[in-house]
Length: 346
Ligand code: NAP
Ligand code: ZN
Ligand code: ZN
Image (cartoon, rainbow, N blue to C red):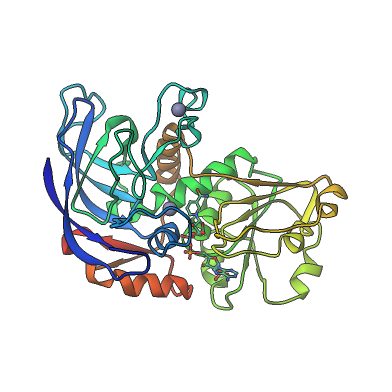
């Protein structure tokens, strides 16, 4: 066992405090990582605030982890000491079910082990990236491409793969009209991926002052969701809407923006159930879908694609003592566009 410093919350909505936890002894297939940066995902807030059922406290959030390999177990083959690596939203899965075998470990039939706020298969709580060190099975660690800074890379481990995976699956590409709903941490990366994949990209946002940045990220059009005219102007237009909003949306209203056979894919994960009228689907053979992060092979593919296409999250690096303030700012959509904790300040 090895002690490591962390930022933790003792209960839902409690402030962050510095404390220590024990990381497990290195197993033969484990990698020990000195964490350099940890992005703040809105899911960290949902979890630490107890929005979703089943919070395990004390909690150390963080699943956008980048760092340097400090030690490797004797059977590790993919990594050596000093490698630049990343860890995303989960750290174990059964490895045997049909989903694990095809590299979609996030849908593991046994249930994956999340990077934090989860129990591992021995029943021990997992603790995430707001921490100086983490020990992870090598098959759940990815390489950060050369030339990509570790702070900039960290949001790709969740925001990146969560948007890349559904954009690819629903064929965002040349000739496709894709709308990105919500321009926060996920949304601003989604714009870049959809553009790089060759789609015509429209951003739908409440904000009045994000248009120039949206166009810089590769959007072709920008519309305000607070202007009722938007919904008349864009009726029946999109092949795909990727919903990244952290709160409930008016599903029927957004379905009306899809063409025949269009799909509304939800990655935003508000706690409340949503409602829609079946006629919104029936009359234009539309679909509603959801998507959870992405598998390990696809995560490596996404990082390599990002490096190749110059895709980079726009980040604001903060110190450990600023995390509570950062959570408040995210809740007020006052972030451009991802906070990343500099773990050396912990
Ligand atoms: P974020 O940075 O806070 O961005 C969310 C955006 O949603 C905001 O920037 C805002 O965009 C819009 N928004 C927020 N509140 C709204 C409201 N009341 N009404 C309308 N729009 C609102 O959050 P994030 O880190 O991108 O995460 C977004 C959601 O995805 C969260 O629910 C998170 O838990 C979920 N998530 C899911 C997965 C998955 O695997 N499915 C993975 C990661 C995160 P505008 O200001 O542009 O309107
Ligand atoms: Zn996340
Ligand atoms: Zn499995």
